[in-house]
Each structure stands twice: as C-alpha cells, then as structure tokens.
Length: 487
Image (cartoon, rainbow, N blue to C red; front, side):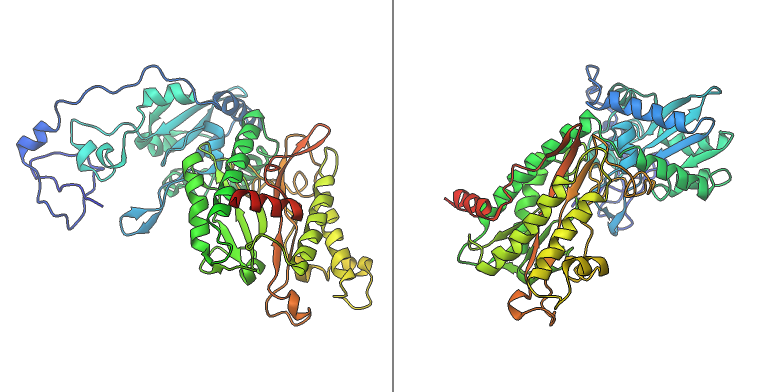
C-alpha cells in the first residue's frame, strides 16, 4: 500500500490535507507542484440519469417531512472507522441515509429544513471533487488519485434529485439554523456536536424509531432488490456445493471465501458475516469464526446472503450433508425442522399477527422433540407451555429483512412484533434444532447435530411468496440438488 508524498514548504495545500508522519519522500519541488496543476482533462459528466430509486426516495422524504413539521431533521451517512492505524474498514452508509437518498458516500449528511409551512427543504451535503489547484487531489491521502474519483456536486444533484452542498460547511450551517432539531445519532459525532444545544436524546430516539418503522413495508424497488439478492445468494450456495469435498475435508474459510466471491461479483458485499458451520459448530447459532473443517459425514450449516449494490440483503440458510446424503438420524432431525418451517411459512399472510409464524414453527418443533422422548412423560402441550423445547431451539423463528439483515429493529413494538402482517413486508422464517455437543440430557447420537432452514418470505395480498425458493429445502430434494451440481 503506497503513501502520498509529503509536501514541500513552498506548496500551499488546503488545511484539510493530512500527511503521514514518516513518509519516505521529503516534500515536492515547486516545479512538480506547478506541473500537477496542469494538463488534466475535464471529466464532468453531463448526461447522468437519476439513480433507480430516486422517485422512491423522494416519496420517503415526503413521509418523513409530514411526520415532523417544524423540526430540523438531520440524517448522517457516517464516517469511516479505523481498522488499524491509517487503514479503515470498508465503508457502508447508515441504512436510513441510504434509504432516504440513494447515496452511499461517506461523511454525507441529509438535512431537511422546515420551510415555514408544513414542509421541508431537503439538501444533501457531500464531499465535492478534490481540488487540483492546491494539490489536494494527489497530496491528500484521501485525494482522488488515492481513493478514486468522486462525483461533483452538480453530478450528485442529477443523480439524487436533491440540491447538494459542500459537506465542509454543514456544521456551520447546522449551528446557524434555528428551532428544534432531531438527528440520527451514533453515526457522525461532529454533526451531533453542532446540534448539541438543540437536539434532545428523547426526541432523537423518537426520530430513530420513526425512521425504522418507515421501512416496515417494502416498495416495488425494494422487493425487486430482494428478489435479486435471493437469486444471487442461490448462485453463491451452488458455488459452495461445487467446492465441497465428498471424501475430503473442506475448510470452513474456503466455504466462506467461495460465497464471498459471488457476493462481490454480483453485489456490494455479504449482507452479514457468513456462518459456515460444520459438524458441532452448527449448534452455535452465530458461528462466524469459520475456523474448522467440513468433513464427510458432517452436516454443513451455511447461513449467508448477498447484499446488492443498493444495499438490500438476502438471508438464507441451508443445512447440507457433506457426503451428499443424510444419515438416518440427520434426516430425522432435518425433516422435523422442515416441517416446522412449512408450518411457519403457512402462517405468513396479510392480516395475521407477526408472531404467528414463530408460534406455528415452535409448536411443531415441540411436538417432534417430545415424540423423541426428550421430556419424559410430559405432553407436547405442557412442554410448549413451559418453553422447555427452547433448550434445543434457542432463537426466535425469524425477523424483518430489507436494507438491514435485521431490518426495522428500532420500530415501534406495536407495529412490529406485536403488530399485524401487511402486504409488502418481508421476513425470514428460520426454525432450527441445536443439540449441543456436551448436552447430557439427550442421547449421545444426537449430540453435535445442528440444523437450520431459512427462507425470505414476502407477504402478498393473498398470502406469501418465498423469494428464496430457488434453493431446495426438502431433504430428498437437497440430496438430488447436491448430486446434480457435483455431476
């Protein structure tokens, strides 16, 4: 990784330019500095079309404006986070910012200023092109010759359908504004500081809750993004099957990396840390260390999702027999989880309660676990009433899905987990059974078996649609799919 040159005292870079303390070069000559200001072609783009979601983002901002008349509303994109010294983690904007603007720039800030009537004027503050006249574009570590070309403010206005201003003025503009303000916290400390005398934590929490709830029902653009995410994820699972050894062990990190290639080729990234859990690791719900190996005879629990270039993610799990066929006991556990998922998916319909799919799936699991004699003489009804089945099922059966893998997490409880399902909502249905390797309450042959099946379900006007149905679920179909892909 190379480093920018240290400027000579004779150059006059902008104050924002920062340089490494121990750079190899000791400044630049006046002649080089002068040379670097000349001979660059104009690259301004004038034939840009708005981003695909521009019409939707305008409607979303209008809904936000109507909910908070008279308040200054501020939604930051966020700042880069340091990984080590002067290297950052890959940047991803705050989900609310991307949802309201379509932009993914770091340091961006959306500001809605009340207009005096019931509306707001929306302005997007962004980093402008780095300057040539003062050397910023090549001397600054974040200049365009280092980090790549940025959109000009004029280009951004065409793309996002919003007036755009230089983000270097945003703090001063926020300090100069008057009246009550609300800010989305935990993304930009500088923006919060500029509003410290007017933004109140309780009001900001209300703001965050509303923004989260705004995403509960997906629009047409979002649904198509999730369809694509699921289709790309299915192709990623196929890639994994093709590298999964039938008679040799396969590193979990090879499995993780294979899926990651698909995510980066077809989308922006993985939507969350891939779980590539083989053998007993499958009993750890969020096994992301991926430090083990999938061996013949094991089950591989693969929980992974492609995040699209517009940041919508799939969230799919399949549990696969590494050898190609389930053992009798593995099939028994798998088929119980499949039956529970079928019951859960059947409960997803408009007008039903959000929790219905969870109760349906968990009740089915309790029936199976009880029938295997794991609770002595207790009936399935009593086991379910006492929640004893949860020793082996552990988690809830699903969650909202969208631009976040656990979408709408801060929305109002009465609209979310205690509310009704509405057409346009998308949720996961993901029951599982997890027999821990050291659980002495179950027969030894069960220990270390973990099975989860997860799909992404769209609530439709008359029922539901499984967006991830491209991947087989039934045990015999899984085996046939594995055989076909392996030739």
